[in-house]
Image (cartoon, rainbow, N blue to C red; front, side, top):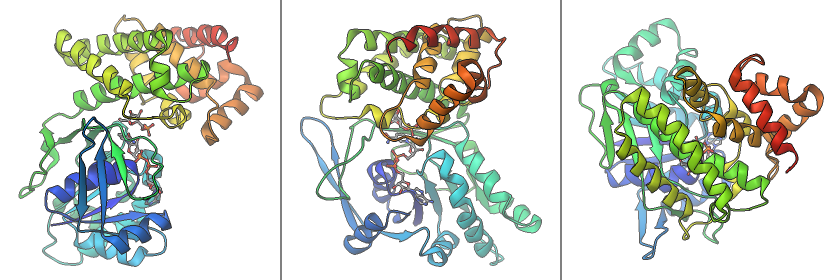
Length: 385
Ligand SMILES: NC(=O)C1=CN([C@@H]2O[C@H](COP(=O)(O)OP(=O)(O)OC[C@H]3O[C@@H](n4cnc5c(N)ncnc54)[C@H](O)[C@@H]3O)[C@@H](O)[C@H]2O)C=CC1
Ligand SMILES: O=P(O)(O)OC[C@H]1O[C@](O)(CO)[C@@H](O)[C@@H]1O
């Protein structure tokens, strides 16, 4: 069984590559980071360390890598021969890999009996595989699109494992939290698919991806944005501050009410899910930088993502959204590291002012009550920043 995995970064090596290798796949990583690609090629293995008391280490063997830019021809052939293609590159990078995936699919379809291929985008977004499918299909001709409909599937997925920025002497080593959850849409699978150990298959992914995104990711970025305003460098330090932790808990109550109402999750079970996640954010064996967890604030503020979407749902369901609005206001003030999206937001605020900036990046119109709440929270927070 062969897998091509795009993105040999934190989640790629620390989660997806690990599970695929344990499931018996030969894994070819594709990345643009020449040093990582060269090291994977040369060594064919790397280690994953669990951030816990015992620091258990697993050596992931039987892997190699290709450079997505320089080795494109070989990568196209690898996609053509693969049983599985996975990605963890960032949802905004999918457009850059879609061409290679499309070329690989076109090549495999030249054989009349093309074997089934599953393409799973493991990104923090709703419908990431479906987004990738659209990008790939726009690069295939009509005949190949019709043939791909029969032998290529793009099941959506939700992936959850906190993997902070790594800084070890060994550039391939990756320290990850022990917890993981990978949920895949079973209804989209083609006949003959061999389940991967450790993956949970569900018929309807939406409740799972929304629960994950609106709890883990909404909560985490709330800690990052409020932590940044309080001048903390790490999530662990921010979560030790009662005010930040209280804010995160309030946000998760808001999103929890939406999730329970919309998807029928059991309220008590959801409370336990939140408690576990707050504990994971605090994991003292990890050092997770505010700059990583808050990265790409434009993506995080966008209409379908972890902040605007649950806030709008809360409004539509007659529920509370004040703390979500406060996180969105804080996201506008986030300037950690050299994040280009944070810089773009600062320019927008200076040139167009907060109201227009909120409308442009969240898609929420100025006369909407959620917009008005973000404005109010922004004015309150501005004095801190
Ligand atoms: N780190 C985490 O804890 C989690 C991350 N995710 C999601 O996983 C995805 C990846 O995140 P991380 O692994 O943290 O980021 P990362 O930055 O560590 O890894 C991304 C990798 O993609 C590579 N890349 C960039 N452009 C590429 C291209 N054109 N072709 C091939 N590779 C390319 C980068 O060089 C990098 O190695 C994101 O969508 C993120 O939201 C999901 C759950 C947890
Ligand atoms: O910021 P991104 O790219 O959505 O991904 C990082 C997020 O992924 C996670 O590490 C796990 O889902 C979150 O804790 C974090 O907020």
